[in-house]
Image 1 (cartoon, rainbow, N blue to C red):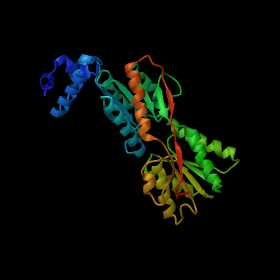
Image 2 (cartoon, one colour; image 1 turned 60 degrees about the horizontal axis):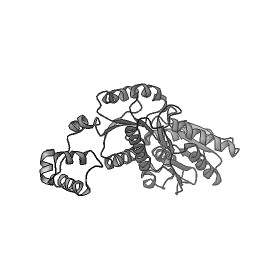
Image 3 (cartoon, helix red, strand yellow; image 1 turned 90 degrees about the vertical axis):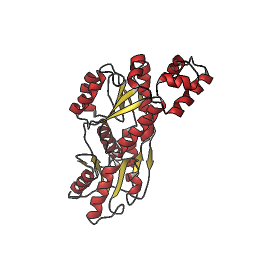
Image 4 (tube, rainbow, N blue to C red; image 1 turned 135 degrees about the vertical axis):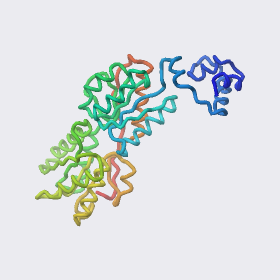
Length: 326
């Protein structure tokens, strides 16, 4: 159905329908209601290209996801999409894997004005190249941080969260707390490792062991735990930087004939549904994943509407959820 037919159905002018579609505040409320009811009744879908020509906006944003198979990333995307839809936007997804070539291919959409802004979750090591590719396009970094530059960021305090988790494990009498980390090209991995090491130093615990998973997967977590179990002195607790890695670690411990938590306590990070699905249920740092996604879009919309607005660094709340794995 065309905009002209919507106007006839609502009993208003085409100009009034256009103003409603573009969220103009000059429309009388009774006319706005008529137009919205006509749109709903006719299941009208506005022509995005036509809208772009009228407003110089596409009402689309590009989201570069570091790993869509990661449950935490999937929850972030849901939050971004929910907030985008509430503001009349749609999202385009690219599973970049922090591969700059894949990101470059998707960012070609910027040159054609196909999207109005970008939300990235890519590793901090890619930021210099991303900065060059994205240029002046509105941009927000989500759950990963930029140390400098005009890039808004949203996430949690990974150092503080990691320190509390290690402090909790030590408070339960664990003397040999190991860390299963991921890729140090990501800022969050660097910060969680810093928190782990800082808290052990504060507690004057000399024993530490760090192993690095090749990816954020169950299999990689299992392999990393098997490496720790081969050490001359095995850990009595393991802190994994994602729930998925922690689930893999628990599987390796069980296959080695050991018990969780009696022999080795296990804790994760992110607070995904997986933490409640494994047995025993997993102690984890719960991130407000959907709220982080929503806030990322809100920051981006601010940049879209006011390109000269200053960048913001938003730190969200988190909590330690204690369950039977520790």
